[in-house]
Image (cartoon, rainbow, N blue to C red; front, top):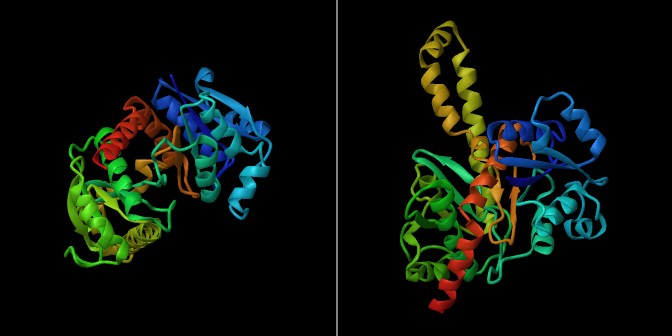
Length: 336
């Protein structure tokens, strides 16, 4: 039984959607046990409206909540009984295999490093979400943890991202590319120019060179490497354009009688296409390189994304991703 601690109080729709997602996850996977962390009375009130296997869900009381407005370092230090701190300590003590939260990004990043701790040799843990593409999915690494990164950080991101894509997503020898403003090696800022030759020298990754932003939706690479400032801009633009296009398509389909008739004909194919570009089905973004698994989901996550984030933890644990990252760092050390 894999135990996943879930921050029931984090996110825009907590605790309702967090609890619902947990119930759906245990219903889909008998091998998962969820520890719902937060205010016990609030969680039990939500659970009362669901039918589920009582042995698969446990409530862990935490009286405090860290809000997105609070300074992360201070919040982690002072709110010892918050759902984020209590949940991460469960992972630290080995009482849970993973922690999932839609709460404060800053608190999750700080707590992951301070409470759960980094794997020895990991310089900076990156956030790595899966994003939909024409060919399936790609891993965007980093998208929010390290705004100021060094070349050695990006090389580690590439290694960890390759391991994740191969063993969690199932893509053999994933193609790795670095985000750039052109395909030529001599282009880019100082960080990209310094990192490019280092990635070329890595024998344990399939580095294919630079990737321009417009090629990302086409699936030009399986692992997309960048520092968090660039990654976060790409992710937010991706989500914004996707939501806008979906809204405009739906609006256009009901604009007239003719478009409504046409919509009936294309609805099955369109529904399938739109589902493929729905990021919620891929779960949250793992904070790779920690001693335990921490997954950050969107602040506006609803039950589908919460459920998939919990199930994602099962694959991570079964494939022993942390052990594979440790082995990769050993290879990196030997190369130096």
